[in-house]
Amino acid sequence: MSTTIVPLATVLRERLRTGSRPGHRDDGHRVALAIEGGGSRAAYSAGMALAIDEAGLTDAFDHVYGASGGALNGAWLLTGEGRKWLRSWAWPEVAAAKVTDPRRMLRGRPVVDLARLVHHVYESITPMDFDAIVANPIGFHPIATDAATGTAVDLAPYVTDRLSAQTALRASSCIPLLAGPPVRVGDRRYVDGGLSEGVPYRTALDQGASHVLVLRTRRTDQRAVPPSRFERMLLAPYFLRHGRAAGAAHIGRHRSYAADDLRLAEGTRADVPTLVEVRPPLGAPDVSRLSGDLTSIDAAIEQGRAVMQAFLDG
Image (tube, rainbow, N blue to C red; front, side):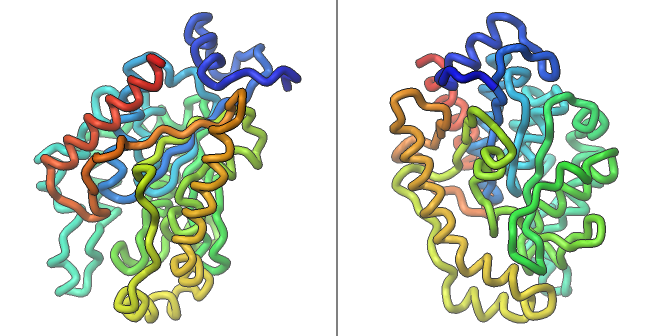
């Protein structure tokens, strides 16, 4: 590793200038992209990822970490077709596939059908090149929550082929109750990565990243709020059946988000920042996790794209 601390922006620009390729670096840096999710709110990080790809900077990263919708956006980047498909969060034909449909709960089915997402939408409507993700020299790290322990787990070791990549995306995005039972990967079961590491930069740092660019989906004046009493009552049977630890992680999620905000704020105040976050601008509209408002989702993509372009131009 390099002993000289170099700003993240400088590393990215130099890698772009020299045409540095993942797997063939000689600058001594290990640069990660960490992408926050949040259901439909991940439209903001989709726009940011789109700006990165449009700037030709995807190959400047060595690893991509993502939780929930952030993992989906990271996967699109690693297909090499981000510019083509990242806007699909707001496409009517995707909405028409009814990945999210509250009426299914009346029939005892998941409100969010992740199998429909990865095996129908990502196969037939917006084809995701899963083989390209697996073959990409940039490491892909979907973050999920172990349903039995409540801890964050990097599913990268399990992503070895097309089917395992699809399964990892389902596991990382499995919202308790709304998306059905936990997803089995190997000999463990997993739920939404946002329950344990909603802003997935800590795992990147623990695994040796020298620089991390974090794509956020919350404004600086937004904080995760504790689950309501009704929400806790609604989810209690699910957690009792599938894992008490996952429930504890859900109840404490707002605390972990507060800690993430604090640590990131400290990192970005450094004289030579190597940990940098980009957020939606103040005044950007709230986008709920299950929002189907395609106009708002499209606007979020554009605002995320604009704020990332401004960061890259700065």
